[in-house]
Image 1 (cartoon, one colour):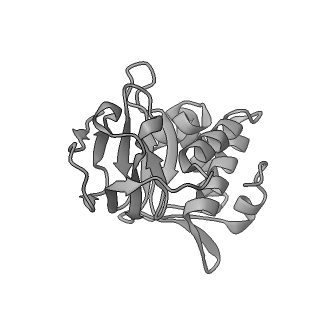
Image 2: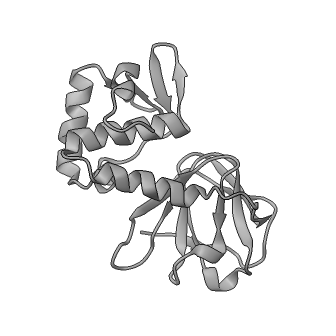
Length: 196
């Protein structure tokens, strides 16, 4: 996994292209400071050797990442779409913590009985939080690799590829080549085994 280091000097706008990652080093951040997403969608993941690449959360405009609550190794932020965030934000005083909420929801998904249920619940969570309804489809503005989907649902890349192929064959998922979007059937999303 490759990433660059986020500069220690707080900035009012840090821009990242899709696919780029930065490491947030908690030792370089003062207490109470946080990152705030201004536009785009980010994936927060663990860079630790034992859990390298483990997804902790997804963030969108308005969400904050508290830098005083990171593990000692830090976390990485990956741009799933063009991303702009500020690293000089002050933590809001609300009790809502986007990272904790996402981690809880992803953990709930991992405890479902089988991979099909976990995949359906994952897509429902992503669409309900980060997607939108467009005509007869629900749309995600980004794609995840089959390997990443496998990591999120606790299966292998091969299993996630097989399950996604079934969804395509059943006309429940469309992934147009050359586009970053993913379209899913509203019926499939609404019948998720976990309500989100």
